[in-house]
Structures are given as structure tokens and as C-alpha cells.
Image (cartoon, rainbow, N blue to C red):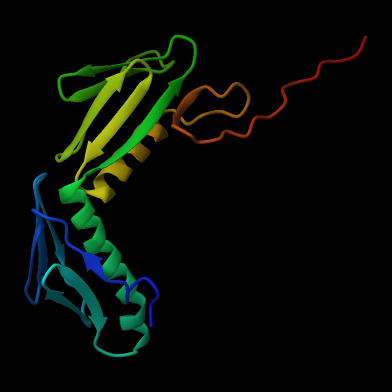
Length: 179
């Protein structure tokens, strides 16, 4: 039995879930998310507890058991609390600003980079910290990864865009020739 898949999910107040043969829909105070059902996986709702079971011990069903439980749990957390990722921009002259709903980045290129946020994701800029928020964990994580990929942190000076708390392993530069 999957260690993750057999754990129950507790529904917080204000969150409702509906399950049919094709779709799981979770709605809460922050919005609504849907997820297609994986074949061979059953979702049961008793009062405010959700359990995920599999039809058989086939390899395919075992592999999807924990996945479906985690996807449903992420939807429940997303519609009740939301998700956020914080990115930090390091570098002399590097600037970040909001331009409407887009992010305008001046990160050392000959032009400004404009990043258009996907639908369902919002961002906030405070000095050199970009906070990406939303109800879908996948969309928030992907948007943060896309922003980071615009200028990855380099190992010599640490310039670039990194996650807050991410540790960049620094390299020693040229040592120079002894005279």
C-alpha cells in the first residue's frame, strides 16, 4: 500500500469537493480547481475526510495511487490557503517592476524582458523580491521556474534570479599569475 496514498485528507471549513467518474472538482474561498480522474483510482468522501483507494494491486494502479492523493491534497490546500514562491533578483543594476499584470525585468540584457504571467497566477514586486501567488501549485511553480530561467544565478558573483533561501555554490575566479 502506498504510504502517501493511504493517508486521509481532511477538508477544512468552506471547501467543497465533488467527484464523478471523470473529474474531481474542489472549490473554496480562493477559487475552484478541477482534475481528471486517473483510471483505477477511487475517491471516497465521508463527512469531511477524503480517502483515495485503488481498484487492484496492478503496477499501474499502485503508481497512480499516491499521485492522485497528492493532487487532490494540493487542490484542497490551494483553494483554502493558496501557494506562493518568492524569487530574489541579485546583481548591480538589475531591477524589477510590475507593468500592469506583467513583470518588467532589467537583468543585464540590451533590452528589458517582459514576462507575461499565466492566467490564475499573480505577482507582487517589493524591491528585488518577486512573490508569485496562485491557487494551483503547478502553475505557481512553473511561473516561478520560468522567471528564474530568464537569468539563472551564475556561480562566480551570484548574479541572477534565484529562489529565496536557495544556496548558490560559488566558484573561485582566476587566481592570476604570480610575478
